[in-house]
Image (cartoon, rainbow, N blue to C red; front, side, top):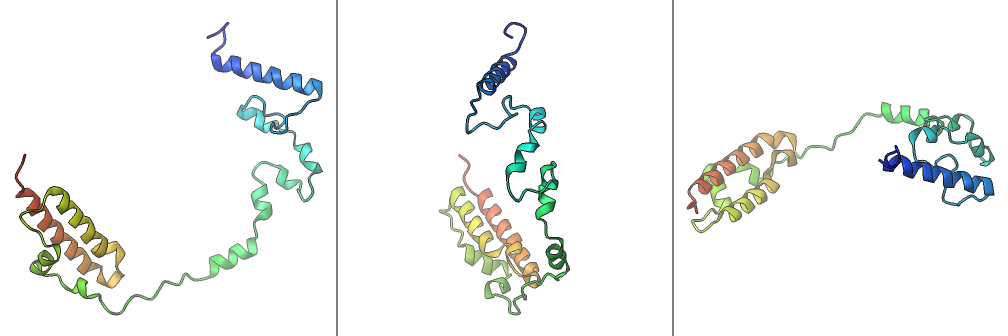
Amino acid sequence: MLFGQSVFQSVLERLKAEDETDEDAGVRAAHRVPGLGTGLAFDVMAFDVMALDVMEGVSAASQRVGQAYFDNLDLDAAAAIAEEPATAPPPESVMPDHLARIAPEKIAAELAIAAADTQQTLNEKRRAFAKANHPDGVAEPFRDNANRRMMIANLLIDEAMRRLPHS
């Protein structure tokens, strides 16, 4: 604290004094907004709203805090959008071939887990398999198969990681 004030308070006092001297001299910086010299929230509320009257197209209601949004809101268009039913894209009627393969042997063949695989290569295989088969990425009717494929693939990869030599 400097002379009974914190550093922050002393900086605010200096900025306020500079702002007052600019106003007294009739000089106004182009980048400064009147009433915002200190940067405190209560100064924002004291902003001279009457200065906005010189702007064309500004309604009195938009000068109130939070009212400008409602002036530009088209309630009829918003109601029409709300009444339109959301149209979901039509689900695919044919299951992709890879989702039909749910046997562990077929999934193991897709993963191609080898004895030479490291933890890094197994993690890469897990990510690549999940990218192509994750239940969130397929149509609703096929999610059970995708979920089953992911569970089997994760079990196979976890088992292969358990068998890795620990260093």
